[in-house]
Image (tube, rainbow, N blue to C red; front, top):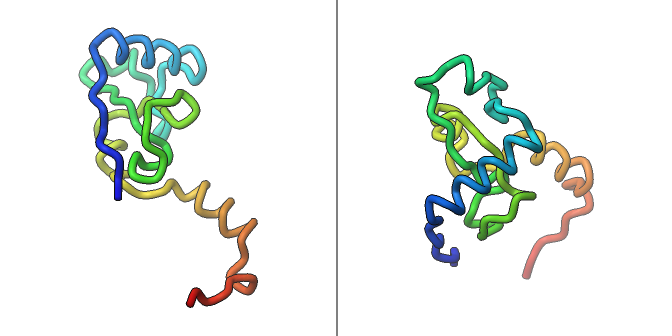
Length: 98
């Protein structure tokens, strides 16, 4: 079951974008292209860990992404996070569930 996504007001969205720009810069988190140099490049708020796994609008889970990268990532886990999880939780340690 996934939690319903609560929509943001324009003020909340502007605050989050400003906070993330201060933290990460004015670049797409994934392709690293600068939003300033490409005025037509739409920036979006993206949940780094998909909303269905980590619902909410916490800054720890938000990044700025260009629309193209955000759509390409969709609802998947980013590969660096998958590698980290696999490094910590090795398949040989897994047990079958009942």
